[in-house]
Length: 434
Image (cartoon, rainbow, N blue to C red; front, side, top):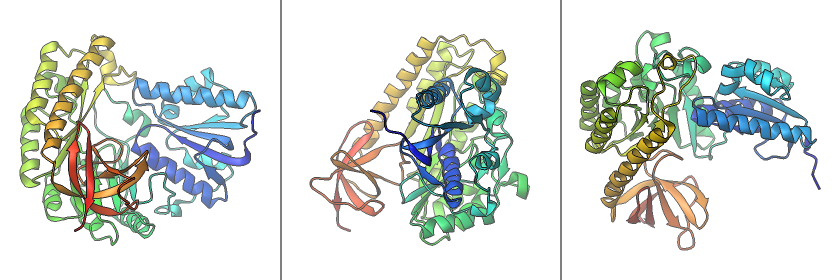
């Protein structure tokens, strides 16, 4: 027998990247401040879906989630379905035509209108008071919105608009509020961290922001995500090497290393410049964990281009790596090119890259056996506590597992863990006293 959902309760479903997590947290904060009952469970009669529209797989997940909830509405399980986020921004007219059962679609900049439809007033003053859907001890901090980069394959500017930085004062205020609410780690996110400040301060000021964030009491780890290699502000390396609060970690998507592919991608970089930058980063911040993302199957990527990329990754040995297959996205400049690498070949190449990276990661992890690391206790999963070092970001990087039947750890605490054994992407350890 079907149970009727709770009346006037709103379920927010979040799909996609950390930027969407942040946006959902802002939405939830406004809803709760407006007196609404909000939940991540499936017990409310109103559903808001925050969609992703970046690549084909993400779009498929978003559409399937919309259709699933439309079916729930049709059988009377829920009453309203609203859709927001990147997919809705990019394909609103198509979605209205093909899935008209949705009550209303909203774009990425339509938060005031969405709140109005849900009978809540938009209040800019809520900055820094967002309700988190991440664990209590860490939080994403979005320092800017949109992107001005011309990357040929990327539809983000179509969905998120041009680059807009928040002021340093706004971000410090938000960070202080997070710290007062128990956050110990903030993860800086943007489409491009390195562009921060150009629009409002007329120069890159990520180094200034980092220095000021390090002065916020209660924040112990500051992590950097999504740093564009072209125009990289090298002054942030001096801050990273000096400030202990800044994690020895940098997420810097490279995408490719073949010069003619990089040129077609409009990345504004060359193999030689990328090699020089990586050397500078590793020289100035010894022990840093570099995470990158690469793409295979871009139009015109020949076997020799792929081999060049694969060999370069073997030589460069990134501590963390993700690999995506090229997605042919309409209204991007690469859409005019012939998508001439088959899906099967794309998957094969991605598999080879990740298999190689697994070997690199295992080799690096083996060197950590018997060493002791300061770790954050993230969560309990099955019979284990799941922990992270400063070289690991939540959900995407290595994790340290501690047997919960033998040891007790408190969630959100820092502790020291000795590594006992490892595999390709997981480490197994035991807590030790200071």
